[in-house]
Length: 294
Image (cartoon, rainbow, N blue to C red):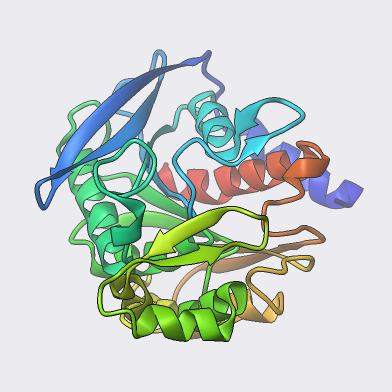
């Protein structure tokens, strides 16, 4: 990060009030008969704060990925930082992920979108936050889901930030799994297909997941959201690539205030090398979202 960029962020953040600490609360709500589990962060000393919904990535959960240097998940760290600036947040585990009900093999993009929409409904009905000041952050597959949620929600979103968002989900997953395994998944007839991920983890998914990759088109969805949009991408991202063109295409089809945040970072914002890049992204998101939540 250049000295000028760092100074810009510092000056922008200096205009945001700082609050001491936050209260974390485990919350639940139901979607199609299954329980979704989330964590609500409420800044101390703030009545009726604005709130951000956070949507996690593929095979993840609301508190992952953990940053080795500090032993803290990226979304947990973001929620804590934003609470210190008077912004509440809700981070959820999709159904079939994390602590929420269901088996991972039953995951679909459609279900993720439904969970995001239900989470916004829950926030809007929660009297501890300001339903007129809501924002959304989605990372990776959560960015693709976030584009659809932003387009489809009945609630007015003051800002959306998409971190390393997927833009062509079928292509990205086919590259990750391998074309032959992807074809097997499509043709599996509802039986789980085992896949070994590039980092060694083994998962199983049913044909519904593979089919749903064609049902959600983030680029088409983003045309229906006209509020402020931040897209953050890394030139070292080998999961959603090439960059920054994959991120820019979302802005090309979006109408409204927008910003492209580009850094020399990977898909997890260089988290395995330390916290500096993660913290810059968290701060830049706070500036962009925060000014639109006032």
